[in-house]
Image 1 (cartoon, rainbow, N blue to C red):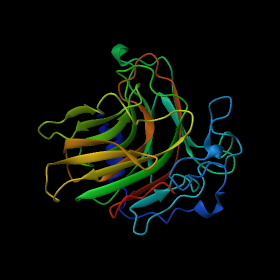
Image 2 (cartoon, helix red, strand yellow):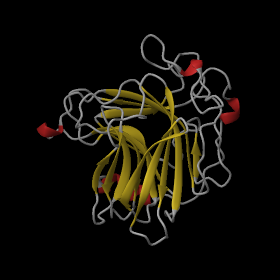
Image 3 (tube, helix red, strand yellow):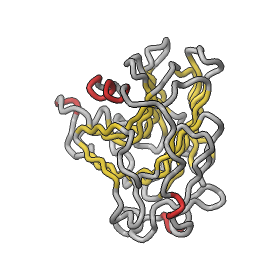
Length: 284
């Protein structure tokens, strides 16, 4: 992904600081969409006949906000310190159908957008400044995708870490075979696009709530390379090695395609986002 300076620079002006501890979580019901003890969504998180979260499931239920987290977001208190950006897509907090009673970030990308025709991106995200990355960072979100990307060359982006000085970044993606990908545009030696090994034994799922975790590590605060791991419902899906690292200080969450093809339509809900430097956050 190559972010535009037009949205990175305003983000850089936001003040640093942790958000309040997961406001609104106490109002979410434990039943009907909460992860169970094993980190998997229970029956209430399964899709209805239309492939959306059940209208009565109340979202993903209660989720932990770890002590000392850089941020926790349940999408129930407005935009706040986040910067919103979108291109051929809509992004809004959805507190109604199909997410009755609780907020979630709802992203819809337009169909028929093709980068080969110079039609731009089809992506939307919320982003904000965080404390500069040192040696480890842990991200957790609950994600409901109506469909996976339909074309192999089209990568759907969930999370981005970048620098407000526009030096580069990394991002976690999914591709059409359920596998994850890591786009490394850090401007470090060896950067590029990396994909999960095939065959994909554990990948992303559509039509149900998934607990998605992203772990980013490097040996020291000045190391130029490190690794990132992705977990699905608490289980390790893949570990990406030799990834370019910088003092990343901008975090973004959303969905869509930096390189859209003609089948660029998607609909995704994201909830219970947390970012921590202490340890893996977990699904509950």
